[in-house]
Image (cartoon, rainbow, N blue to C red; front, top):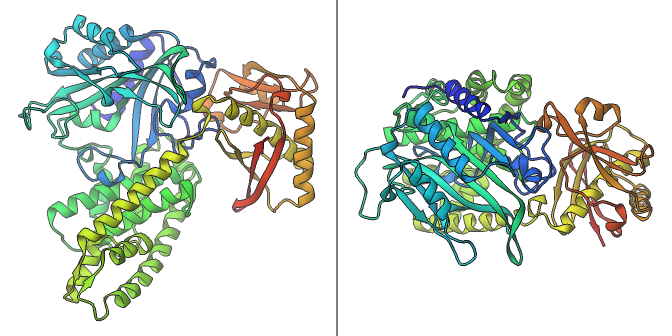
Length: 592
């Protein structure tokens, strides 16, 4: 079936609107304070975590949308046929409403009726069970009733249990749909999920009915359905393309890159580099549109890595001049209709890309000098030295090999790979550590600290006598809170003591915490703080008010959850205050 991106998205959303779903707005790539478990929004469910845990969503129990996402876990695989850093995800959700029968039946209906996929080519997988969670016989029977024969229903274990993203949080078995491309199986063990290309993953329906805790699995307050279908992958399959890079999501971008190339390189190398540049600069463009700047920490570091990796591959293609803004312009041409903030922040995007290119050009020069020192009177560049050039100076291994060849010396490639592997394992461990906290785990300590940020937010405004102070970021674990806010200087010891004292005063007063639902406009009239307006969109929002009615100390638009009274919090203590960016300060605090 020939279908373009716009038609696919429109068809999906209209289908679920027919099934009484409400289309919700595409959320920011920067997760809201209620889900600080990841640096970026990696799935449509991230903005919905509080509602999966039981909070009432302003737009009801049946939702759908297309969500822009960033995932960097598979960055080394980008350049193959289907892995991407930035992508769009179609999704539909049931928040305590319908369950497996409806979800699977509608998935089957959309694939076969709307997308015209042949039912005889569909394979599905279901959860095989574990010591703690039973085998998903219910999904198996539903698929049989829908006409999928037993031989095309596969019971799998690890692949068919989703989440939690950290050590705790919502999770559950899932059922994935695959389309048989007609290729010959790679072996007798070939099955859906095999990487040979025979089975194309189309859709995943996750049935979130468990909450993983330190003691094991417990049932959630409500059963939820969370589904996901990748736009780019599905388009490639429907259009009969060999890769996502052959769809309209990438062709204009790759063409723009080719216009910058002066020389010729081997076709296979060129193709991979073209894909990496296109993917990374698309992702960088969307991250920059969120007003994130390249840096050496958190989101800024991911952004810097993407831009510099793109530049490294551009140099392999012979692109020496400044080019990133031109590629970003091609990205805008594809997406600016659906994402107006791209055009709005166009000047910022282009300026930051130009600045980062200039910075990297300076680093590469230093790297060449470092290489000369390393290679002097040597017969081989060690693996650790090659990795140092890669990590600190942005040299791809290919560049080091080329330089070494010119000097008639070798490079310890295996040693480099071992160093890279060790680095990736350390990075992975760091990422897993990041997932430890967050409201997604629903721990009592996290909920308390979340409530404390509301008190801190208001205390800062009152003590510093600056009503314009607002939250600019938040990260909460079970151990501490981290709160970013706009202010142009460091706080004095007296100011910090006054903020801490005011928060503890409000805790000791035992102020009630209540939730009211109202329109965003009504919330603003009340003076409510609302950082993530585009998460809520139109309709009613949840507003948390701390204090007696008419005498509230804090009013904020927030998804929750929160404690019911401030006396539950304990003693508030600020442990650190620091600057993190121009005009942005950060406070770290604990509850004792």
